[in-house]
Image (cartoon, rainbow, N blue to C red; front, side, top):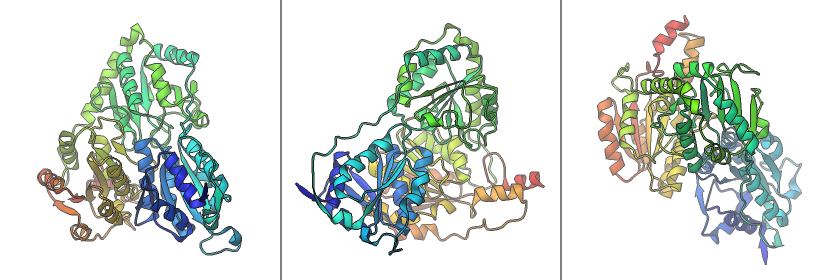
Length: 554
């Protein structure tokens, strides 16, 4: 059977189980858009900006474990989408970006929107290539799925010359749906891990990264309970362990509990499951000495190249998390596990104290109390998304994730991530509550996607934390240049009127006690909604105020 290149793209995507593409239409891939007319199994979600499209694809990849798909045009379109590719690379998210390119006969002429795909994306992907022969689409696009999902997951970018997409070729047998390939620990490696753990006096687990599923999380919970081990989750991986579990001791991320930071420093054995041990998880590489830590590090990671990248481990194992936890949970705990019983109990108590909502705030709105209300009223499967900013410190510290894949947030610290991610989450799981936390600066980077939410029937509730400034940068500014404010003030629009223009439900909260009624009202509306929460600029973080930071820096 003869097919155009555009039709073959659609055929392979269907074969690989794709049901949704995010993107902005472009003339460079009209042949693919035409093929999608006859491909009802795939929905094309037309976003308002390519950056939002790539973020939605990243969020979809996180939620499904299969590559999120983004389709954009050359030059400015692909450049706009770079942000989501960078997120996927640092977050180890499976993602495939398809980029329409100029015709092959026009290459090297600096034709309209011509750019060097490999030069731009080559350092931030697992693989970047150009498909210049339509007959090779099944081979190369299928390979993209294998690369994106196997080992340490990540992004793949494929260029599609527009004239190639119009070529007609004979379609052969399509490759089967890809099965991700993950290494598994050998029996000898598991025995070695168990022996080192058994001899510990103050062990601790750091869990994070990708290649998890619900069973792996259940195995972690069972393993931690059987061994009575404390578990901390790496930066923005808090849904790998229920916060209600007796072994959960908090997150090792930005704004870390000082007691947990000390406990990581004092541990004699760290079992690291999937986390990269990046700067956010290690407090700027200060919790562990580089390159040889005082603690014995047992590092299990799906990418062998990640083991020993910064910290030389006592023992390293290349394995996916599902495979590693399945093997570990079958091992009997040592009889002498009570040696660290007090250690684990104290770590849990530290977390319970730390996560208790603060009773004070500088203004009439207490974010900690608002998040506590969400703890008490959101269902366990509610999905929380966020971008970057100091407002996230309240979310990460006080919200209690109880189930896997209820936290969708960028470890790369990308502003504007929360709203597109929440839209993708709502489209993927329309039966679950999708909540986006955003700061006023963060929200304005992608707020145009409210139109996308309306067009495609997503239902998200945005909790917009408005303090009139870029809070994180102001924090660093006051710390390093106290009293010398430059570039961090924000003059905001009327967010209520803006949301109404998109047909979105709105509410405004200026006192803590107004939040519960506001949330109930917008939730009952059946629409997407924006709840604007006005906070005092003094409330930089739950730990210190703007004036306190300025005074300490002077």
